[in-house]
Amino acid sequence: MPILSYPAISKLTEADAKILSDLFPKSTRSHLIALRGVLCNRKESWRTYAHGLVSIDEQAMLTEVSLKCSLKTADRVSLLIDRGVCLQAVATTPLKIPMVGTERISLR
Image 1 (cartoon, rainbow, N blue to C red):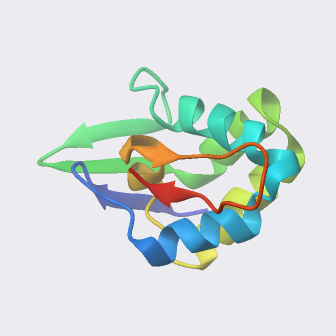
Image 2: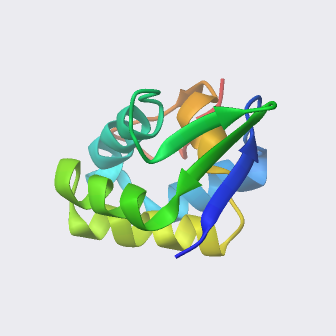
């Protein structure tokens, strides 16, 4: 699997928030919160910083996500990658993540 590279300072768009809402329905929003915790851990060996870029070893990261979150969450991360969502932005963008009701995930 490839190395994913993202600008260290990245932000999600409203379109990205819609993708998150679609991939993480309300019953799985706690998995999204756990995923953000894994993605923002700067001490992970699969994540490196250099010259304003965050580089992520995709296979190692997906393995870590499947262990710390779930295999289904790792599958959802693969779908985020396929849809072009920046994982650095998922980790760092302030989000409103409603756990009940009809609200979608949105930017704060």
